[in-house]
Image (cartoon, rainbow over all chains, first blue to last red; front, side):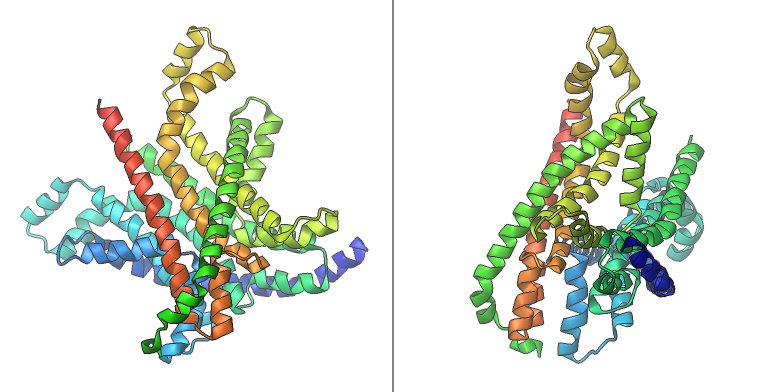
Length: 220
Length: 222
């Protein structure tokens, strides 16, 4: 019986690869957009004026406190009530972008704040405007603190993208869920799903560790 | 249509939400309890001199950290019956949550233990303490103090992750919101209420974490 199931599973393997492609696509797009959003919000978070950092703080807290599953239900089921109908793919991308943006903003803010205050003052004395200060003085130093946790956050993003399967996006988790209805061998089917995620995430985790070691080595 | 936001219906469903909140709390509580045990054991294995235990713990930690919780949950939910292990949905959920968090806790505890200067271990050995005494009286008390904020952070993640067990039809907070959304066609009321309850749990845990961190700083200063 197991052999029959295994054959059936091999038969559906192209579907798994398609699902993996959807996973990579949805997390890749949200990764880029989320990084952009996160960098902007992270910079805003360090602005100590007009309560901007408070608002950004609440944004980060909200995303840290509310499960991604609830978040995606809010985007997918509540936005239509105010007249915005979204297909699963854009809904998933937007949800993941906003979600990852919050975490990345905290990482970026921590990186910026790790640069000693004297650097800011020196850059100002040098006659640089705020944009130049960030671009040429602060970011090159902050990036060493930012990069390792940023890659770690990307791993979380890929893993969290599995949850978008609940709104009907056919990513690799949903392919597994559909397959298990026909091939009732959960260990085999989701073992395969797990292996496919592993192939993507494991190298990323190691990249993060490598960067971490490199940064701590260089600072010595 | 959000101008028709109905607090009256939320009031009607409040008992369901409270039931869900309670379920979320105790499922997370039991899961973190088992996760702590699994995490400390896995960490002990990883730091042990035995190569086999080291490898075993390494495989466990790496494979959990490289795959999503949802895939792990389905793995147990659809997979255990073919091994003739019959757990109900709640037990399956707790199993998946505890195993998932255990891997992260193992790494947190390891970071705490590694952060203790080696001189402490040497001094304890010179004092004539054996391995368990060293762990019990010297290493763990110091390691745990440093790791408690990180552990609370992991607990926050666990509470959020517990929302996934609603997908295998366990009645908890998220499921309560889903029920209200589908029975009354009121997704806004349902999911915003759920979000508010999760935020409540989050802020309590965050407050605890900050309080402990300040206490640590205070203790180190004195």
